[in-house]
Image (cartoon, rainbow, N blue to C red; front, side, top):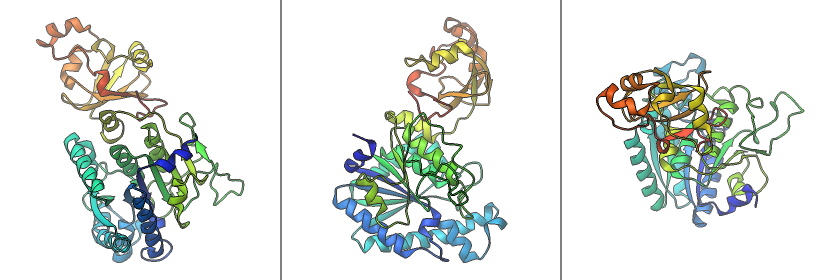
Length: 382
């Protein structure tokens, strides 16, 4: 059975809606699109599906209301635009979905909500409660309080994180493109649609630039997000959301758009490590440790393999593991703070007691708290 065929059995779906789809070509929102989306979600709910929406559009609406251009935007203006636009965006969704008998809920998230393990667990509990109560969660980044450096950069990444957190069966990206093309279809007539992307395929050469004047990430960021989801066991599909009933076409197994074929799913804790958390430091390892970590039956990271410690981190923090060439090969939760790791690096485990005066763990990072990168992508892990 092809992966598209499995979409017919999907029970939990995350749908990411791009700015230029929800706003259309006019100054406000595309009410026809929102109504059609609500109809499709209602049909899916009738089938017993649970649906989560991740939407863009609030900042765009706020810019229009405040009458300024993106080129003149600083962080405070972006935050103000989000504060103005978010109520209008949510009101439109709420009214359209209510007309089809659906109750909606607003969830505004920041990167800190995903980074902090306790908040991450509470988010999971909230999502599960809403979905079991037949409520459609509508999620957006809380741009009115997010600041540069701790944002998701693009809601595509947020959608991939939510899909992983919700253990979705499929992630659908609705944009104003049919999918991923071999080159820019707007400037090159020879562009061909890429029907599927395998886990080992490198498609970065196909993605170029930002998607448009209201987009922050563009196709490159969308590919990154789709790959993140697929590497965590969730197939992702890019389609043209302006076409009526496109979500239903995807979930009927139709050959539309570009599908990113998924790998085997990761356990819940490793999903958080791979997708949601930000590393607080770096451990550089030697070639022997690198080989041991990358084996299919790879080991934990022991002190003897660590050659350098960068950053200031504490016990229980997430750190990145790099080889001597600066490539990320893993990330995981450390059993020692940065000062202690620096003291025991390059030494055998039997020396930990004499070096530190205590032995908490023999591993710097246990394999159960680690994800190992494939082709530089920590989501595709074991």
